[in-house]
Image: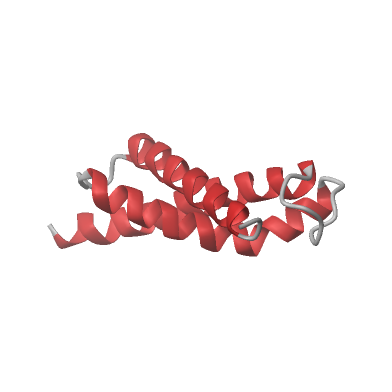
Length: 98
């Protein structure tokens, strides 16, 4: 169960990052479901890629517990960035198809 906590945090922060990025850029009038799915998938990917790097930079052990501050902030920031980027790409693709 403890190994699912970072993935859940990444998915939630990715959905939030994707929603923020879509409201800022407004490149495609996507409905709520594609925004949430692309944000969550991007958040998990971004959190997996950036989480350990940011956790090391923020002074935490990337292999430590799920509730250490370094990995927690790394997962949140990585999820926000990954969700925003993937949501922007999906929005640009869907916007270009119209």
